Amino acid sequence: MKILAIEKEVENADWKNLGDLLREEAHHVFNLYQANLLREIYFTENKNAVLVMETADKNSAEKLLNDLPLVKSGIIKFDVIELKPYTGFERLIIN
Image 1 (spheres, rainbow, N blue to C red):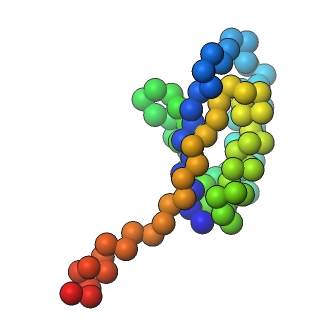
Image 2: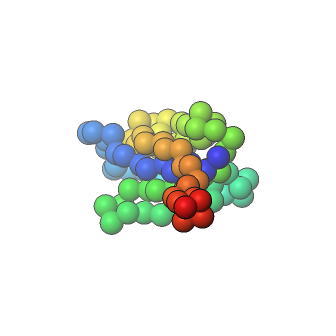
């Protein structure tokens, strides 16, 4: 299942002195990419991460995201959205 995960900063999160944690986060994200669980990753203009994942289901994606160091430390969280195939082309074919 394709999943869209959009990062949200936790209110009052302290981003100071996170060098080691940010490196650990990057390593963890790289491992997800190497495992073909993370297909794409971007930053928005506001520097929030946007991930496109491929997992068995939404629950699996949430478990993987909750294991990220920045999530574990309470700095960020994610909105997790299941992406379904677009069915609008059927209107062109069926009519």
